Length: 379
Image 1 (cartoon, rainbow, N blue to C red):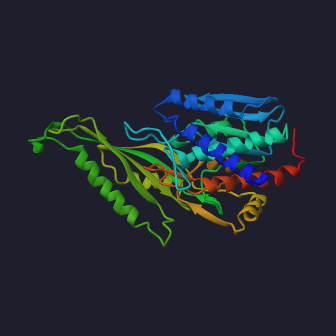
Image 2: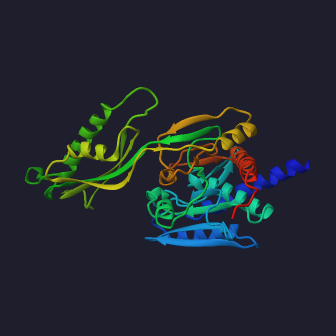
Image 3: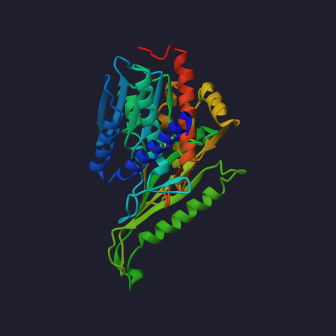
């Protein structure tokens, strides 16, 4: 085995082991103790013998950490990831497996595998170049909107950088430059409860809610425009009542909807249109609101990607959202690409191992190019 192949095998083993170690920690919103445990695992993994500054934050119960070299307050490059994952159904296990060149497990592709890549590249560069102007930020509420993580770090804690790398969108040779806006909305319908055997004596809010949701869905059908689904969409993700028995008509029914919309739509405009469908006994509550995002990646990263993959780069639009929206408003270039992933937020979520190695090498090539321009360190 050659020296290069031994290094490749060592990297592959480290990425697999670290990803699987992260997956078994169920860092979901409803398990704050496991989120904290996962954060401590991250900090312990990256701390090195030479001095690094570890800044810990906890905004409204959501911990985040920023790690910088001593005396570097604004790194040339900031690596950013979130460790929180979408909760699995009750009783589901947080385990992983390796099959057919993929790591399977909850959060493997969004984004425990990507976090593992960033942790390894961060350690490697700080071992090789002590004081390198490279920072790492890890948050824990991206899946809940990001307001108490990345938004807090940039808006209130004053975090800044020359360029940010967020491997939470795109693909290896597909660099995401546009993302849809996001609205998470709760619709409430009030009625009057009663026995289900006498429905004429009650006002069923669940039926009212279902009827209104169908009207809303028909409205979104009129917004379709061309191919590629680059138009507003809506998905009903939660529907519930206070009922615990099957023979009672509830007095309140609620539904949560996830709305995605591209420019030129604005969140206030979408909300206003949906409020038109509400009747006097209905209410609409905004849980999460984010405008569409457009970012501008560093041309050096595009060049590094093409050199490593030997394939051209494509700039793409993404239907999902990321924490990039909290950074690009400060004029900071944001780089969004990631390994090959699948079944995100679903059963058998996976991340491709070979593409994890490739993205690591892309980051390595880019950081050498970028940081060499400023003499590796910047204080």
